[in-house]
Image 1 (cartoon, rainbow, N blue to C red):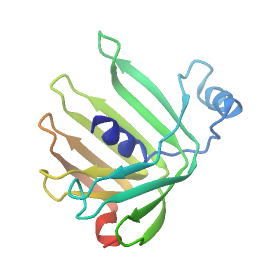
Image 2: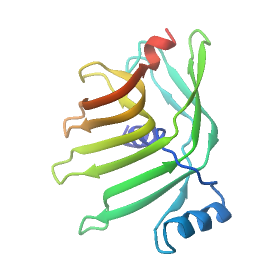
Image 3: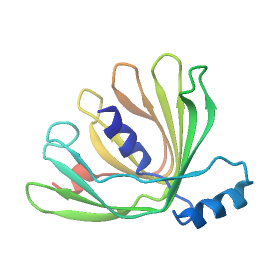
Image 4: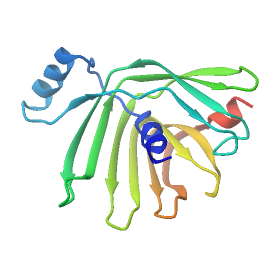
Length: 174
């Protein structure tokens, strides 16, 4: 589940770089040779029925030119602050009905992991914010603007800031 959560959180990332060795060179040149940006690929994903939507939701990646970098680490070397950026397009589908919607999830995302097991995700631009069953208002949300999503140590998640639009893909695909 943690990999799915990370993959879905990363889905909301974007900037203007091509994801190739040349793109990585461009990213480092644009941000300084030692910027730490490296290519990242979001895999296709499936969210089982009942996890966020009442139906099984599938996300197929149609374009992906993302980069990631770690800005700060914990003493054990694991990421404490991590950024993602790069164009990302996804076709969301209701597996039961075949209804689908193509969305641009391009934006930037910063994840800050706290020592207590919580993570704060800050979205700028577009992004995908998953909120799973057991949390208030579960869904797979496409956000646009400036949004903050907090993942608590108990697995619950909630928005603490919403400036812009929020589309619940579960509602859109119902």
